[in-house]
Length: 66
Image (cartoon, rainbow, N blue to C red; front, side, top):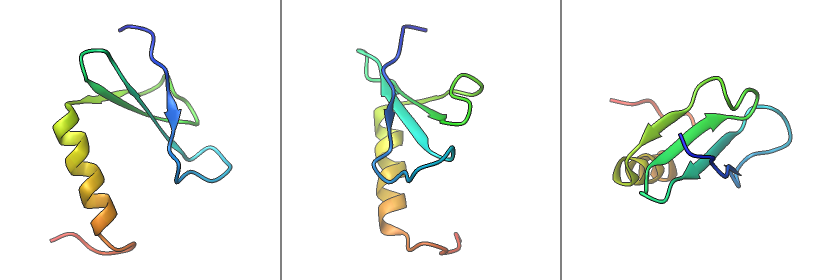
């Protein structure tokens, strides 16, 4: 995997429970958790990541899924 430049979520407060995002030149999006960024790195396509963001933005906090 190429060297990634991670960006912390703008919704993150202080602490170790943040999501970090990085993208490669080919567009693959990578997600990791800040408390141990090398432990688990999830990779996805830009369209799937965009769908995740749309869902997270439109669903009220605490709402249950169907």
